[in-house]
Each structure stands twice: as structure tokens, then as C-alpha cells.
Amino acid sequence: MNTSLFFLALFEIILSIIVTVTVVYVSYGILKRLFFKNQEVEGNNMAFTIFMSGIIISLGLILSEILPSITNVVRLSVNQQENIDFITVAKYSSLYLVIGFVTALFINASVFILFSFLTKGVNEFKEIQKNNVAVSIMVVSLLLSITLIAKDSIALLISSLVPYPEVANFL
Image (cartoon, rainbow, N blue to C red; front, side, top):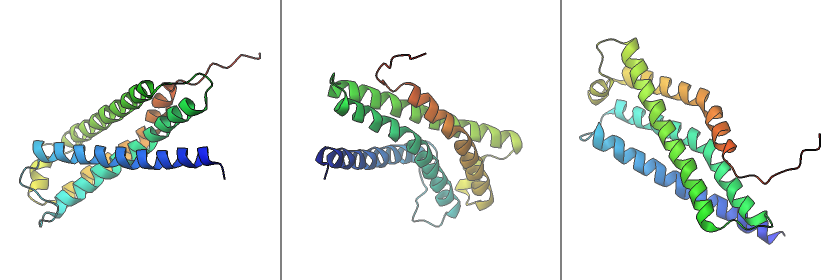
């Protein structure tokens, strides 16, 4: 058994779980404080539950594109001859997470702007608070569609920032 590979994989699993749980927890808290102070998942508001589920799936899709780049930085720090210190790994990881979080905010904002543009006079937050399931499903559908379309571009942006070692040009 390759013990270094085993411990690296174990570290990546733990890191992925911790980062995902933290980002979802923070995002849920921000949404609750800003828009849905009186709403609870265990309540009777199905629209709120659908909406929050869509947000969590969107975050999961974005994180699924960011976490491989973080683990690549960790792998590079372990496998390169010149050691990359923990602070450098933390800086790159933080940068990737900030880019992902800002991108998620941008995607969410664009969905709300698009929805408001498509449905003049409908306030999606108030409708979700009133348990309007149709509005919630429409907002979540737009959110997931835009996230699915943008996630590959997010992955490309993040991977362009990974500090891969210099390779000689053979041409």
C-alpha cells in the first residue's frame, strides 16, 4: 500500500468535507439574515425549502469545480522537490474559495436580476416568503441553469491560478 498516497487522499476527503460544510453553513446564515429572518426549513414554507435546496446544490456544483484545484495545490506541495509551505497552500486555497464565493454571489445576483426582468412586478423574496412554490421553482431552475453553464469557466479560471511547476518547451 502506498501510505503517502493514502494519507494524501484522506486529507483531501477531510478538507473537502470541512470546506463544503463551512461554505454551506456561512451561505445559509447570510441568506437567512438578509432575506428570510422568519423562515425555517422545518416550517410549512415549501417554497423556502426548495429555494434553499437550490442554493445548496448551486454551491455544491461550484465547490466541485474549486476543490480539485485546492487539492492540486496540496499535491504539488507534497510532491515537488522545492517545498511549498503551509502558508502558500493556505493563500492559494483561500484565493480559490474567495473566487468561488464571489462567483456564487454573482450568479445568485444575476439570477435575481434576470428573474425580476422576466417577471415585472414580482418580488421573488416576498413570494417565497408567502410560500409561492412556483416562483421558488422558477428561481431555482434559473439558478441551477446558470450555475451549470458557468461552472466549467469557473474551473478554468481557478486552474489557471494553480502554481504548476515550470515545464521546458520542447518545440
